[in-house]
Amino acid sequence: MGGSPLFTEQEWDFPSLDRVYREIEKIAVEDLKLDVYPSQIEIISSEQMLDAYSSLGMPLMYSHWSFGKLFAREEQLYRHGYSALAYEIVINSSPCISYLLEENTMTMQALVIAHAAFGHNHFFKNNYLFRQWTNAEGILDYLAFAKRYISACEDRHGRAEVEAVLDSAHALMEHGVFRYRRPPKPSKERVLEKRRRRMEHEEESRNELWRTLPAGIDPPAAPPTIDPEEDFGSEMKLPEENILYLLEKYSPGLRPWQRELIRIVRSLAQYFYPQRQTKVMNEGCATFVHHTIMHMLYDRGLITEGSLLEFLHSHTGVIYQPDFNDPRWNGFNPYALGFGMMADIRRICETPSAEDRDWFPQIAGSQDWMGALSDAWANYRDESFIEQFLSPRLMREFRLFELHDKAGDESCRVSAIHDESGYRRIRSSLARQYDVGLTDPNIQVADADLKGNRKLRLVHLMHRGIPLHAKTRDLVCTHLERLWGHEVVLEEADGGQ
Image (cartoon, rainbow, N blue to C red; front, side):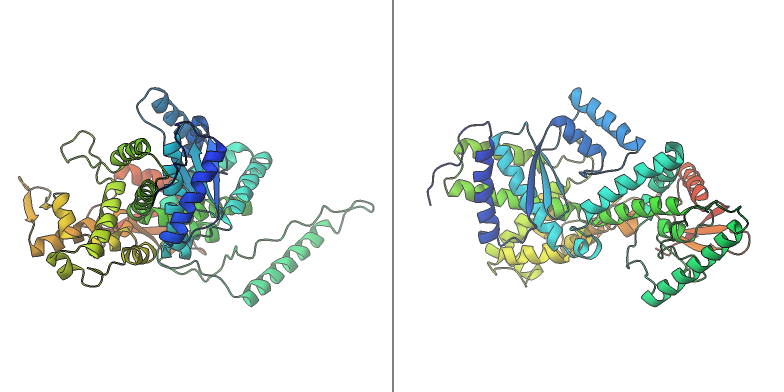
């Protein structure tokens, strides 16, 4: 199928962007059957891109010194040529906001539209973790509220007071998520009854305090009612994995505005939690989508050979995987692993080998590669995706093997090679590296004495007997004590793994 190229120059303009977007949308929706949020494309400068880096990639963010520190670091690295800027940033929101760097060529703008506005967008909307834990329609409004609220708190209570709470909440951010359940919510009747009793108590106390005022002097306005979700009572369920949630609800020393600051931080932590579990899949999906769309544009005569070569040069760099002895080695490149697995799924569906038919009988030879990928994108996270779909052929291409390295031994032992049992062990071992339940310390609140000395006791369930780093542990306990207001004890225990 032939057509006229959508662009022939390197420089972009908005009419060209509009033409390219519409053609990419047609391929994404009609040919690939992607299901996406409405898209919002914004062109930003390099400094705005650096600012987006420093504010966790969000379009709205409250002020905190750590964001400015990160901005200064990234700016220096960029200005001195030690790091490059991302071509785009995409926000999990509805509409899905894609930031494109104004310095991109027209070819790169086409690539990142396909990558962000359709690849990431589809993944955000359809993956079960994002559907379960994030509210794409409400996140921008919530960030706007958080920014206004924290600014108002700084005006009223002072920046130092606000930063002290945020510092401690940020230090505990990775322990401010619900991993396996949604936060418990009291019944409507119970909330209303508690709120009524609180209001009656406050009104009685206020009347008693001000009843002796001289005639003509009015008491100040009644204080605002307490948020009914701030339920301090005897129904604390322990052990509790979400430390910020427990501090927000039950800390004896926090005031209402400080509890709201903690709620803001843990809401952001919960929003980003699915992204931590799907880095390989999310980037792999977006990279596979842009690779497929750019080739379809070329096949239809909508981009030139020069544009295709420019795209391939960039794409090859994105999915490059350094060897273990390369100075650039920093673990697995999520783009390389994710794209490699998704391209391999397409191969298995289209031209499977006898080995593929043994390992993947459900999809081998089905020809429905988009159906297989759509199912994977919707129903898996990194750990389960690798455990289910990493093929022996891809393990050979990546030259994977497993090493057994035990502390105290003088040498390492190769414990899994390229045979039937070795492939399964390698796949399971690699999958476990993407299980945040194993990579994050398992710290739970075990006991909280609300009626006595108010000591808070936490337990770290060690994985493979590995304790916490002593200095880091002490710093975290300092932040815990600041938010709890009383003594905090953190103990080590065998996690049984």
